[in-house]
Picture 1: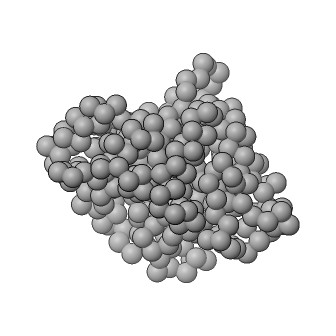
Picture 2 (picture 1 turned 30 degrees about the vertical axis):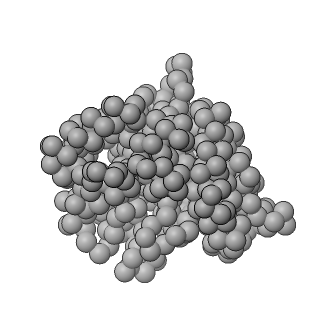
Length: 325
């Protein structure tokens, strides 16, 4: 997930609660994880990429990409700046605004796969909890089952951040406890790409409604060897409620060694159809855990392509995800 202040950073691993969760992760967030017939997964895209299609509005952009799903970024004021339109500005702050967006979603056959929050828990915890209190009922009313959250230190030294993270995750998880909504921590930074930190948060919070927005690339960004990634995905698959799908193509001699965090990320970021991450294998792992969420495209390599080529890159990436869904 690319934030305003951090364009390409990430990390992730282990939880003993995984086996129990495989049997009991429902909480209204996903279908029970057992043997059942699986339906196609929803293919979606982060709303921040829609303008790169050069279409006149977000609905035309989604049609151009051929998808019916979108991750919607939401501000603390419940604005949706990524859903651009020539005549409207979408907001979830009022019943009328929610009704207008719901009507346009229905008219265009689009589903919101997740809301996306850019949290700063160690700077403004009370405000973050208040934000969740406003967004959670909207998510429930609109049928949005996942909210992506960001659990990363901003003013706290990373070695002192775990107690802050646990307190924050408990607070926001309590807000959704009575609702069919799950919170997906993105493995997105030095802190949440550390498996021990994820394990500690999940154990301390103890809620099946707290899981992951799995960014398959971010473990690789963190420096883990390529050969180790799929074990991480298998371990955490029962906790995944939402995804970000992007990739990178490292030189062959760098793929299976431990690299420095973020090593040459901007240089080697690549489309998912030309990167090192085997998304067919990723989807198979998620399917085995009876994942019911979306495959959400995130692209951090468009700058490598001329603007005229960028819409085609996104289309080609979406085509790959649709072939796997």
